[in-house]
Length: 249
Ligand code: ZN
Image (cartoon, rainbow, N blue to C red; front, side, top):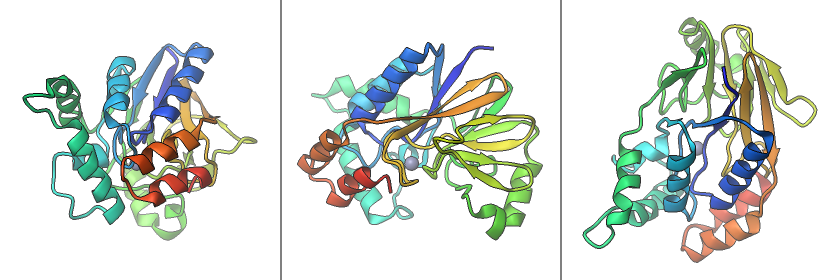
């Protein structure tokens, strides 16, 4: 068993990814894996994809990675617009053959993985790329949680909602906070590692997790989001995508 850092929902945010990788290196964590949404929303899809290719032992597909190669009818307008930008940045051509490896990497990502006795997917074990396991599902969607937990005999790690925390078999969700960021994993549970590149839990710091045997710790890392915001605006992406990074929403 080695310690495994789990990053998710990077969303082309280079400054957040670099800050998280520095923290992972300073912690001496041996391996890194990525739970998807490498791209989408942000201004730096190519450098972020290249870093993921270099640093992660495996990466699984998120809905935005999937959206690069499919129809975007189900995406909201901001996400769709950002994916058109992302395609333009990544699509290889005769004069841009340096992009081919990143394009093929994103095109051929698996939709789930098993490692260290755990399951990993972007969304949910029931629908690994698209379905959200929301923090309110224990109250509002008990049948859905029942079906999800019926599929689990071990911990399952996800991203997708950009809210770090743990769903227990009693369907209760415990949000990860500075006061409560370590969780013991005994049997089935759904662990959300949060988002590196676009946190939505009201905390603008990048989120990632470290799995060490049956213990997981959620880490938060400040980064220079003003630089990321300036790049999003300079790229012509929607200002809301920049503005939300300051609020972590
Ligand atoms: Zn995402």
